[in-house]
Image (cartoon, rainbow, N blue to C red; front, side):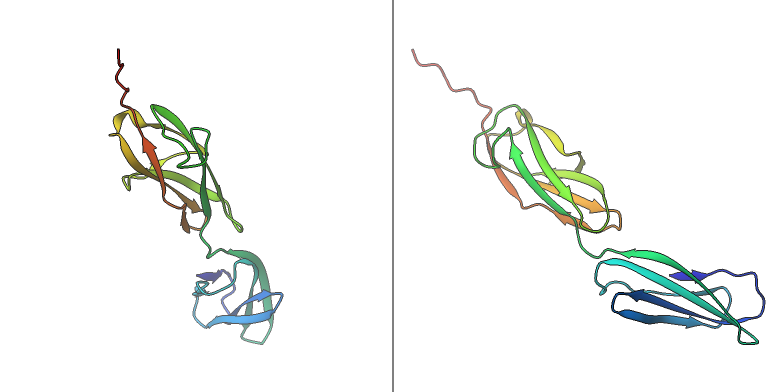
Length: 173
């Protein structure tokens, strides 16, 4: 919602517009105080837009104000880069191992990061997570990273399968 606040009692209408390099487009017109209009940015291209609100009073005088607004409809990118120092899935892991990953967003910042093991609960993490595999059964397990940007868009890494083997091999005499 875009809002125009004024203490002037004689405003008859407010025209709301947005501008970009491609031109200026009307978002809406409101004739009732408090003056506002909905702006659906779902199908807009990501970027920074100038919002212009022009109020017109009873004698035709105009009062304009502007601000900028960021549109971000694209989910952030998440990628698991290594597990225990190797490419994900490149080696069998044992015990506690670091899971290193990257997250990024082209328009806004990444606000939250989490990891899921075997499709379970999302656990808050930073760019490295220490994964305690000793509580898991031997065999294949999956990891996935979730990233949420400042606008609430959510992106996921590819699901990575990692082989866990915490069972000690027997000694043959």
